[in-house]
Image (cartoon, rainbow, N blue to C red):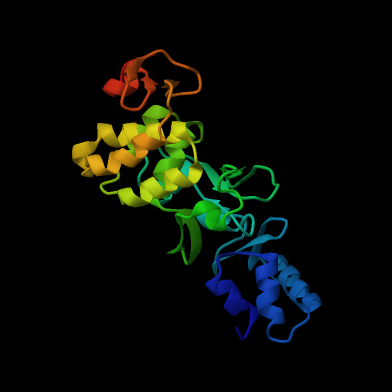
Length: 267
């Protein structure tokens, strides 16, 4: 990086410490780095999204109306941030409905906030993977909108949305969205289920795959390890204990609407 503007042009969204580390690496002082940030904010070249987080404003565009990609923002809200749940499905282009709420995994204590109509909601990963690298795996860094986004893979996202449907719009949204995915690496799905150590999540994932055998090329060898992880006693599919039919293979009490996928019917 020869100049600050070189950094800005290759980093559409960045954290304060990222710029300072790159700039001081060339022999500049932290004070000079901070002064440069302040100067470029004043001239409209940079936009401060929130404390410690900045976006580069394209040339010829006003900072007041500049578009900032929400996935790049979510990926930089904390040093460990990862776009997850419904937002990850939406990033991959696999959602039934379009949301303006972005959930992201992080171990940092931070609050939700709204920027340019997008709501950013932090979520702590389950305790079983909270302190593992990439929260247990299934995280990729992809080029996106001129920068880089950290996001869960489709396999990890499947497990996450079935494990926490309340963060993904409920069963209809989860089912319809996952049904848009043409292919999952089922061995990776099983590994993510194991990492979470949740019998209920194992049963939900197994039940979904069982229901979509033909579409997803699911074989018994894919379901057997999930059955071994499923609950020993019957559990309700959802937390509100909606009445339904017991699916003995998975020890799940499944509402008829989910079992028969009768989404169009009114409550």
